[in-house]
Image 1 (spheres, rainbow, N blue to C red):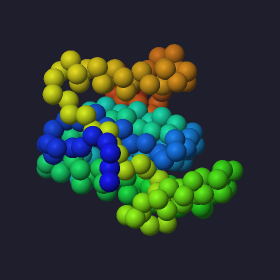
Image 2: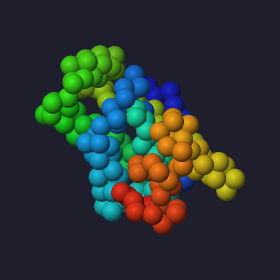
Image 3: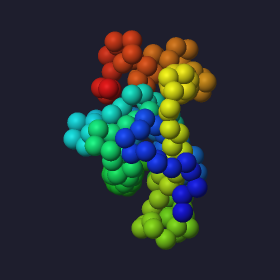
Image 4: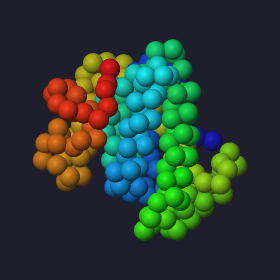
Length: 178
């Protein structure tokens, strides 16, 4: 059973964190980050996902999301399932130096939970935090955009390509936001 915070208000605005099991640094590879970007874009255009802010880090994603049709949990479930399957397929298909190690970790995690099949890529939690006030929203948005700075990857938030900070500055981006 999930131990993280729950999405109780399906039409609410939430700060969410999607974490790779065992904090595996998989998103150091562009090919895996691009799977996330493409899937977020698909969910935005076809499933009613509203993306207000996001950042892709090496082993997790932070986002501020809502849904047009009061089905945020369903969209997140589908997003996590699809991206896990796509990333696992990619790991198996390409020359990945960490292939054996990663697949062992994902297999071991799956063996610990009945609802998993062969592999578990994402943790079951989304650490959903309902954003009730504008100051709280602004705090979480700043936290998201400052993540790459805290990681020591960039000096300015807008320098990280896999972040919505660029959208707010009208710079070239990989993903449209709402």
